Image 1 (cartoon, one colour):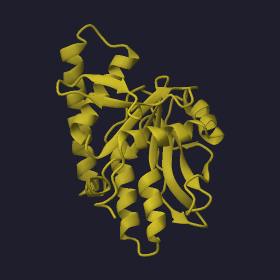
Image 2 (tube, one colour):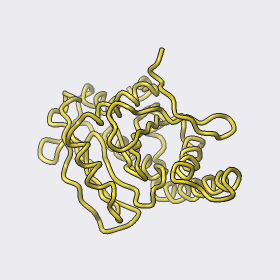
Image 3 (cartoon, one colour):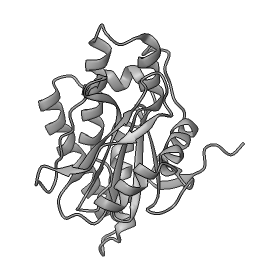
Image 4 (cartoon, helix red, strand yellow):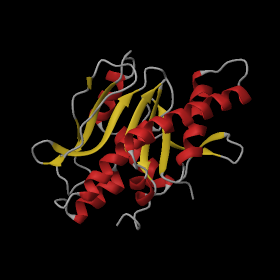
Length: 235
């Protein structure tokens, strides 16, 4: 199933737009967008067989500026976690940690013997990790499920090394393109370019302004590292 599950940029934008129409999701975006610490909440399904049965837990904080833990679960007692939403007070783009954490959750689910195949398929097709940052909402979805699951490796070491590599690539992009300083959008574009360069085959990334509905566009990187926003669902 992991080998066979691949989601396109259009699939990712479609999922992000579905979330943008969900009132729970909009409420959480507005609630956490201006927080000075990281706040987040789990996105869950009421019915694990119905990917449209989305609701979102109340937002909470670990009182940290750059981290927020959300525990994965897939049972009737704790809920069927299909994704996460959290804010970035520093207004940066998604980081490797925003991918590594979901990858660990995915691996745990794959290794579980209690999840029916159709429910795992729902997870692979509909998982999302949303980041509220600098006036925008990012949504990460799975592009290649096998690569996504394989990303975990030694999680602690991999996450630390990946974040250092990401920070260096972001700074290099800023120095090369924005020597006189950056706007929020330019700062985010630097991180977007770095993240896609590192892991672009594994995930889809979309973005829209806070308050917009059905306006997500795929974030794409060309061979020179430049970032563009495109509608991948246009014929």
